[in-house]
Image 1 (spheres, rainbow, N blue to C red):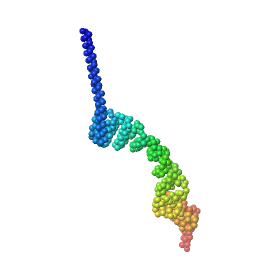
Image 2: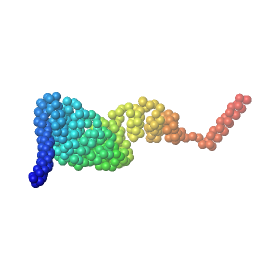
Image 3: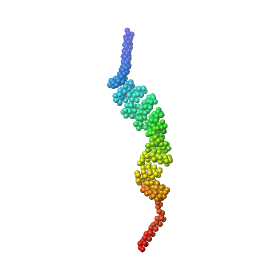
Image 4: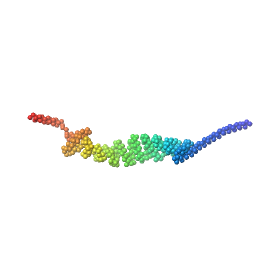
Length: 394
């Protein structure tokens, strides 16, 4: 009897333990089924949403995609589709937010790269350059890119950094670009300009010379190079560069002027210098400075008179005209030539800049009296006065 009672008690206890265990298992199965159903339902709504999105039925697409996200907020595809939807409906902030979520959920997938690419476009459109720069850096550093893709990324990155006035960092990325496109004169030119902007003139010069080697007929670059040579005091290279520029554009006054000045520094022949001045005066017939220099080089009366028509009191031109008549007087001893020489020297003497030279020439033609001659003339003058007085008394 006691055994029966014990058996019943044990059986009751066992049943009491089994039933809760069975209920717990059933609850577990229900949870698992709910998760699976959610994923399944999410996929179904995502499929519908994708179809609506492709057919531009945006309201229906948004409803379906939001339901898909509600059932499964861990799927990057849903976030990416919502990003696309909001981009196409001009809700750009929302678009960026969903594209960000898609990259957070699946940061290394092939689709993440496309999401970052779209985000750079949206940031640039919004003029949010700093965020665009960061998105470009992620594209560059976190993904495998083809050479063409990497060049495109670097192009965008360098452009944005230049707009942000961050020339040092722009230069670093431009150098990477240059390694991928070593034969591109445009890239080399950009690197050169960035070197200049950061004060690295020597490095800039090397790059500009490379650009010119790639394209010898790039006369814009040649002009920049000529100016750099001149500023650095490399007169010979500057002269050769300006000579090429002049040969290409004979009517450019600036090139001829630089050739003339550099030619003087290099000791070029008088004939060469005069030829350049003649070209300059043809281009600028009323340029008094050129006329003066040409008159000085040639000593020709025509050019001297041409300048005096513009400035009759010009000290230099009047001195040169005095010289012209002085040389004639020395050759032929004609009194009229010495008179004319004195006339123009006296006008030049009124110009402080030419006063000393003009006085020296005046004194050469008509030397001043010595002290003895002055005293002698004074004596005879006094004596003549006395004789006149004596004659008057008689």
